[in-house]
Image 1 (cartoon, protein in one colour):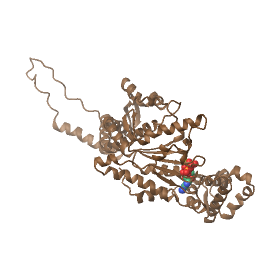
Image 2 (cartoon, helix red, strand yellow):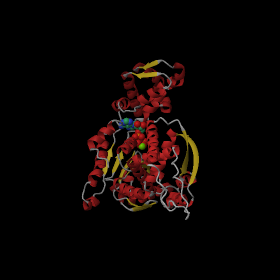
Image 3 (cartoon, helix red, strand yellow):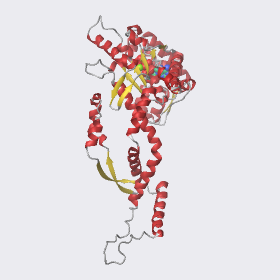
Image 4 (cartoon, protein in one colour):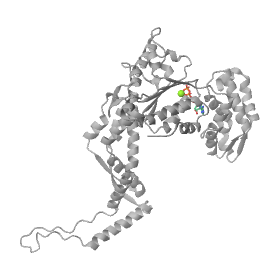
Length: 463
Ligand SMILES: Nc1ncnc2c1ncn2[C@@H]1O[C@H](COP(=O)(O)OP(=O)(O)OP(=O)(O)O)[C@@H](O)[C@H]1O
Ligand SMILES: [Mg+2]
């Protein structure tokens, strides 16, 4: 399991997310606590419940972004789900327990990938052996003797092939193996017999459309019933190698070993990010239909957060130690609109601050894949070199803050609309301006945006 220290986690998040130090720290601690718990003696480990977190902050300040980046860091089964997608049991839609099934699916994939790494070497060797068998079909054994009582030699063992003959064959194989490894044979075509995995076809469609909810592994059921199909294909060796390797890998990985490991990992290290939790806030009593169902969703989520057993197609999964990180803008609804039982299950609260010009500037400059870097990259494919001066970035940030203050505060998402508007002409004309270098400075930014900034209404529409 991942053993990044909180400081390292925050440093990693810093590469992509500006500010929001509080939130990053809390999330980092929670993640580290997963690891700490794993180091404890068994009885104590059972007692340590995860401290679920709830992140509150206006729209577009990095809540979902933190989850997205965290998922890459956490070497653990991790999913992000939108609370608003779930419906109360009995209504049409995804029931809350399906998030655990989804998490288990992720866990299985994670463990499979881990095991693939362990088996890669063996699979590669087996694939090479199969390739060699195709290139140099094994020599048939010497002629079989038929028992003839009159034959003085009969009954003897068939003479073993002369040692030099064997080693000659071995030598050719070694020679070919060396060539194979050096990639000298890559272009040569061979005919391979490919096993068709039963999961590839129809069944996938079925299971995706919610049949999985029944907790039955249909895919496996039908997969076992259908005979394994094979088909012959002619492919270059370079391709054949990866196909055979993949086949051998699948063969080597033992699903019976994957499943318990995956469930163990999900139960102890799993993390669920419950986004848009404010959308299910609101208590039923006074309102009409949707509100009641919202409260129902909260009640359905309750036991999952609290700890219960969910039946998945891989077996029962206990949710006691799964970490939940919830997030919501809570513009309309307040935390206190969640049912009290649910509030209590999220002991750690963290507020994300709304962003100001300084942060917008940093968001444009610092993150590894910032918007500016993205636009530069996109335009470079047309042969246009784009440069935004420091002054220009300051101007954009200032306008961003002003517009957010005047109309709706949509946080860093405003940068997207402003940049898009600013670069519209360049984007449109780029193919004709190939080879040029375009420099945009602060004056140009202000000039381009001035005419719409003058008209409040226009601003509302465009930016
Ligand atoms: N602090 C930040 N640092 C870097 N980028 C940010 C930051 N905040 C927001 N962004 C950028 O703004 C966009 C929207 O952010 P995000 O999806 O995290 O919003 P959110 O807080 O989840 O809002 P909502 O409540 O509407 O879901 C993303 O593309 C993200 O890259
Ligand atoms: Mg979000």
